Length: 260
Image 1 (cartoon, rainbow, N blue to C red):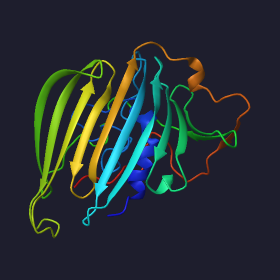
Image 2: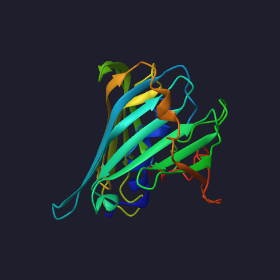
Image 3: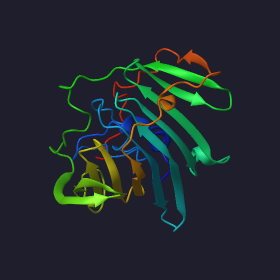
Image 4: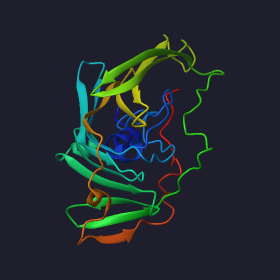
């Protein structure tokens, strides 16, 4: 199986948006997963600043035993106003064919814009954002069953994960034999640890025989207010608007394809 475009985009582009954090039990649980676990916006989180190191890994084992590995490492931050910043370096996969690729993103719901920074050209691509209302249903908040996978959720209780208290949830999805032409049942599992204080996922793992093994983690978490400079386009950068018709951040986008 080849790495899909959605998985690549999710791996290198999701952290700043996911810093807002999906609700526990929702599909989206961390950047870097593409299939149903990419950057869902949800509500903008205010009053819960933090910064952390972020990492995600995807390992796909092919039928001949060969393996494809893609990793992302970087830093992420959110201030008290709900602005987010991320710098992520992706290694491996299509984007890493010529070496590591770094992406810098700023999400500013106060100003109403999201920016992608290019350190090489000293440019910032700006897109308008739309923040869903607090009554809007977050993408992936409901699990579809009729005719789809059999879904079983189990609460794992509360534990301290990477220095913060988090609630664990394990979700098992089973596609019955014959449902999509499969000879045997396809079983995938997702384990998520969500911090209610930070309103974000601090650790997650996902296993699916169709996509491989995936993991995501926040470490070295600091609860203090990040530097305001992180959420500003650096001096000397030329700001240009993204081409129209390419979509707006915050509209859910097109979302990554669902697990089923």
